Length: 429
Ligand code: HEC
Ligand code: HEC
Image (cartoon, rainbow, N blue to C red; front, side, top):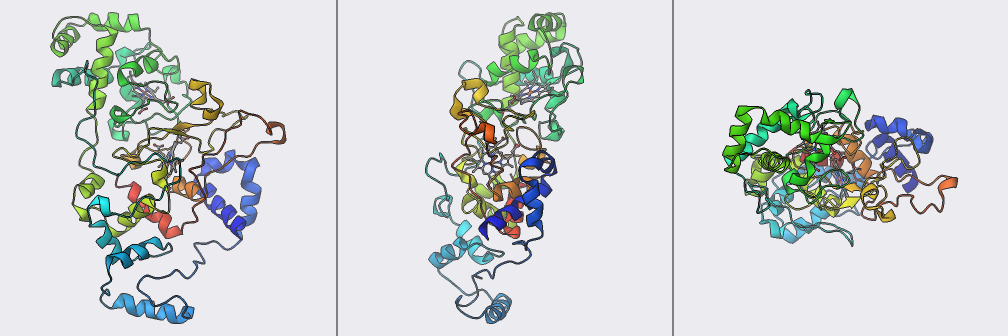
């Protein structure tokens, strides 16, 4: 039954993540469709231990009756320990009163995150107002303004037509809304444009972590033949020829001079100024516990506990700053992308990508390094199925480079309404 259920979940997941359905066709579609006719968990929920109903050894009908009666009457006062126990039980429903009471407590008294050995997690926290910056590049209004101007200026590209903002658009959550971007000569890029609003907090930049500071990162897109395809000397010539840029650099740095280091410092300062503000989740964490509705709060509870998201997404940024293989590497196929391995050359890194921040995540679709997930619900469904876990073909057996699934990922076996709650929570970030 468990296997059938797994395939059923995979089928549901694959159906939502349509792009996946086609790519994984050979691997699992046949079994998945075969399982589609099997009863689904969402259609036939097991009788869930309802928190406000009487002991579970009652006949089901009687339990259901008392459930209706109980939910109609005023909530029975229970102590907090009993509440915590009730929240642990999964299923189609949750005791909303207990949920509210437990999450009204200070964060340190919330249910402990459910994580696995090896997880590097830290407690959830509001985002700091300012992203950290290196001592040699303190922010200033003049520098940030110059950075904004450079960010939006297509003169930074070889063709004079592509700006940073072409692929990092404030109206698209600082990404570009495409699975992979179009760059120089409308060439398609290889990976999904990462949103830059949270980059000031990231320990590693890019999906494979190949840059470690915003100052160092700038040259990559500028010179990438598929992105801006510029020669830095030509860009600097163009900037120096403009009197207003000469003034703006002098204002920002206190002396005249336009060079690459200053250009990247200004761009870095601008990107550090993009920290998302005033979102519901921060208000909730800062004490406005009504900022999340019941379903979003239930999603938060699951995110911490049975969905095990905090194995990798935690702290203020909702990232462990680590790299993990979610099975999206297409090893040995046309779309192969081995991620972190391409930077480190370490086999253990094959197929690993950085854990992105989930702040603003509802605005930054499509999702994942290859941009193949069109809906957040599709992402959540696939986590519920434990992610794809491609198996080696007979020729690949024993291949030391074949990416190993991450030990922090498991099939979750969550109920449909639980998956909806997690999705609703993601939308508050
Ligand atoms: C043609 C589209 C395109 C253009 C133009 C572009 N980028 Fe990007 N950007 C991307 C893509 C795609 C990625 C992810 C690439 C990867 O991880 O391999 C990315 C990643 C980044 C990241 C890493 C974010 C993180 O948190 O890891 C930063 C920062 C960034 N870009 C800044 C810039 C700046 C600054 C410019 C202008 C100088 C620029 N980009 C121009 C497409 C673009
Ligand atoms: C084993 C670590 C791990 C766990 C556990 C995990 N994630 Fe992720 N998450 C990642 C990594 C790594 C990526 C990027 C993977 C890629 O693109 O190949 C990611 C990407 C995502 C994205 C897409 C973000 C974007 O900007 O494209 C979402 C949404 C997400 N995770 C939500 C969740 C939720 C919800 C859970 C719990 C059900 C969860 N994650 C559990 C590591 C993890």
